[in-house]
Amino acid sequence: MNALIPSPVAVIVGASSGIGAALARQLADEGYRVALVARNEAALNEVAQAIRDLHSEEAARVYPHDVTDYAAVPEMFRRILAEMERIDAVIYTAGVLHPVAEDEYDFTKDRPMLEVNLLGAVAWLGQAAAYFQTQGQGHIVGLSSVAGDRGRVKNPTYQASKAGLTNYLESLRNRLSRHGVHVLTVKPGFVDTPMLQQAGGAAFWVISPEKAAADITKALRKKKQVIYTPARWRWLMLVIQHIPSFIFRRLRF
Image (cartoon, rainbow, N blue to C red; front, side, top):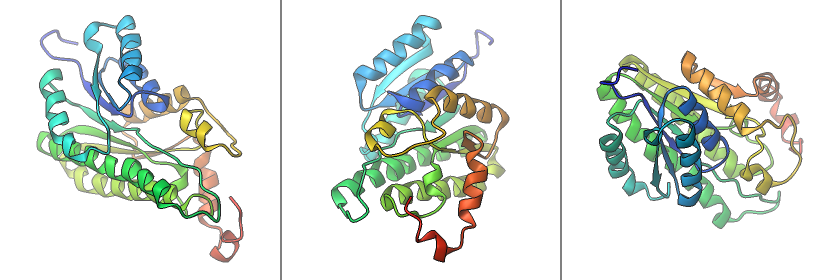
């Protein structure tokens, strides 16, 4: 990298743990400087220090922020841009999953999933979209889920939040492609993160956050539009999407 040209900057929202933290480390290895955004400042500082120890003091900056404070996003975005001199990618990895029983309808659990998983993403990625459209370049990445591909019996609101994010990202992709902006939708299966551990229940094909981050980094480099991680979920979800409704509604998963 030319010393006169600052290295690229990735803003990672939800960088304190899980996929977000792993992605921050891997993008730093790729030559990015990373702006780490999340509510847990202590955890952010740990992630940032690990990156600085391997690279430089300028490699990571910490920006404590609650993603449900939507009104604060424009000023936070401007602050990151001013302090890091450029923004090349905005990646939204923040998410919550509250377990619910099949006969449970609890708005106090439902609301945070919509506020964090969908509205927080719209606040941040919409801000990124406006900026990148004027720049004529940039990367937008949203962490959706295989859970958003079809409405299953378990946890309707979590699935709705991810389905909404998937459609939002597709709309951004169609709107921004003519402006040179790349939009990537990531659909993980089960990833060994605190969110999965909190949710409990059966899980299979569980991968590490590092594996998911590696797949995202590769897709970012290749400007992929939609990826599943691990990739074999694509074929399973293709089958699930084609199960007739009269059969699908009887399945207990």
